[in-house]
Image 1 (cartoon, rainbow, N blue to C red):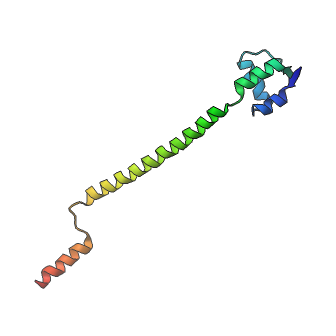
Image 2: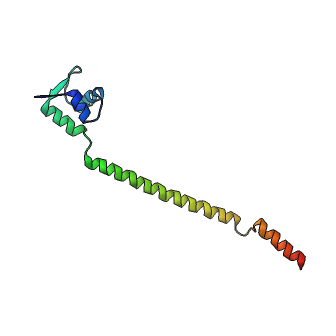
Image 3: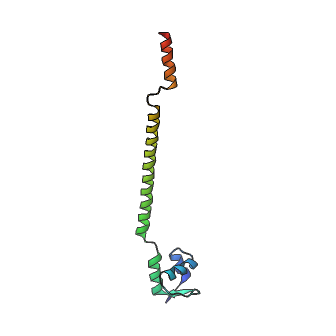
Length: 108
């Protein structure tokens, strides 16, 4: 029995043209004008090209882990900015405080 290449392309979520190129890259011989392939060959191709559910889960886990790292680094960056701003202003009086002290001195 045989399988349509277009049906196989749908199963592996790939355009037919790209599927034919990928089949050749995998080392399977197929005519450029072929429209069908044997069941055995179709099964091998599908196993090679179909994304595994486990790897998809891992990828989504990787994405959430990346997002966690991004949030962590953003928080650390914000803390660093605040520290640097505090260092720059350390020992310097705020304009409102300085004005208040001048008024106190003038009343003495």
